[in-house]
Amino acid sequence: MNGRPARPLLVRHRDVERAGGSAGRFHRVSVGRGLVPRLVTGALGTFCVDTTDRVHAITYDDGPDPEQTPPILDVLRHWDAHATFFVLADAVRRHPDVVARIVAEGHELALHGTDHRSLLTLSDAEAVATVRAAKRLVEDVAGRPVRLFRPPYGAHTLRQAVGFRRLGLDLVLWSGDAVDWLDDDAEAVADRAVDAVFPGGILLLHDTRADPETIRPGERLPAFDRAAVLDRLLSRTRAAGFRELTAGELVGRYRRVTSLARQRMVRP
Ligand SMILES: [Zn+2]
Image (cartoon, rainbow, N blue to C red; front, side, top):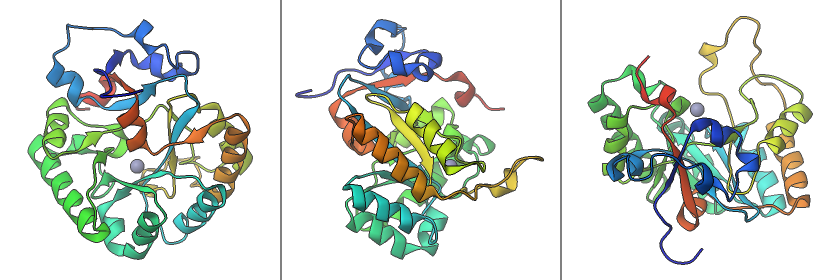
């Protein structure tokens, strides 16, 4: 697409979840055109973009992690692929060497917050203040500006979203995941990741799980090889003709798909 991408498309969240069949056709299921103020659509998070081009973004949340991030970077290098890492400022402070490698190898560094607390537990002013401080810390460590933000759990209020935008942050969520926050066989996780890929999709993966304290009875924390999952994913998506863009490249080149995703906008 040439020139400035058009105004975002607003769709129902279930249309994002079924996006495999909607890629490049989100305009057909868009809702609320002309009814929702531009301030609102501009502040809503981007779930994916509308294209039939076989491009997608691989994104990693909750790192950097000194054990698990480097093998993921090795696989990305092997495939000459680039990903977007949504990092936590607390982990960035502890592991600046991993951040330096992410940046040096051409990946996109983006913000996931200070820690993994839901921003819905904070006042709007506190939430924006903590994100402002986290952005500054990550930028100081990385030596470059951070443009994209994905709040923990994708959870935020509309007022917070307007505040993030004033900080110069672009809210980027995701259109598919691999349930890689629980243990499973690497093969099964990779299958789910591949199933979640579609043209214009933004795939959510994790280089670590930052909230192990939220594990429920009967659940097991991930022990599978995350680098092996990525290797399987890339071997299958490349064979299917996909290439990876960073999330920033995707939203910069194509028309964004946003959604009200009501459950994410309202305080519990
Ligand atoms: Zn997270």
